[in-house]
Amino acid sequence: MEQPDECFDPLQFAVDLDLTKSTKINPDEKVYISKSLINQANGSSYIELSSTKVTCAIYGPRETSSSSDESYSKCLLETSIKFSPFARQKRVDPLLIQYDNDEDCEEAELCSRLEEALLPCILLHKYPKSQIDIIIDVIEDDGQHLLSAIILSATVALIDACIELYDTVVAKSLKVNNSLFTLGYMPNLAQVSCLFFDGEATPNELDLLTDEAVKQCQVLHKAICKVVINDLKSAIALNRKTI
Image 1 (tube, one colour):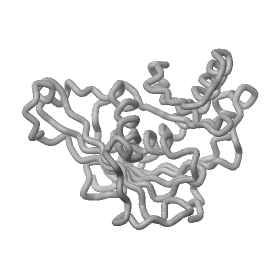
Image 2 (cartoon, rainbow, N blue to C red; image 1 turned 45 degrees about the horizontal axis):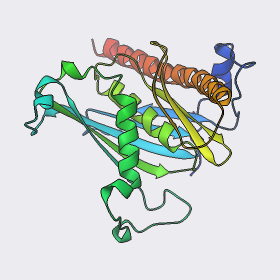
Image 3 (cartoon, rainbow, N blue to C red; image 1 turned 30 degrees about the vertical axis):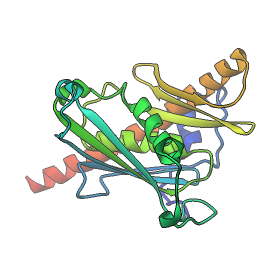
């Protein structure tokens, strides 16, 4: 699939943030962000990071059927992540996929990581006795940007659904040899919401990776802000025409 013509150039945002000398942005890694694409959902988004393409739909907050004490005090998050049969180079028939148990399921692991990234940013206590469903569809996976694209798409969809947030969570994945270093970051609070790394690195190398990921998260955050501001301007202009 070819990228849309209106892809953002992260390098330009890095120039705006005066980060060109201190960050290693790949000029070929374009970013495309869109929202409000699924009419039936309370919020939705479509994200492209490099060659990874992901959609997200938000349903809720809605009344939960759970009777746990936790659900009475704050909102519950329910996440679902599914891969399209053509998401990867090797086409897969989803009807033939079998797992020994849920813990071995890649989707379950991604859901767990997504929830870990989002929980610090959502004002869950604002929605007691409620549930928010986050539905992710992976259209294409390039092998590097999947988790960061999933987190980014969920964040944009939550904004579109007008869910109250402490801050937006932006994520960046960096390739380290044969491993991936993924960091979720809240730019306005200057806080890390999650960090995933299954490789080996010295403390100094981890510090350098964290610094680089934070800087690139700031660039992606600027792209999100531009999309939200442009949508608000369009909505205001449309409202003025109807008055």
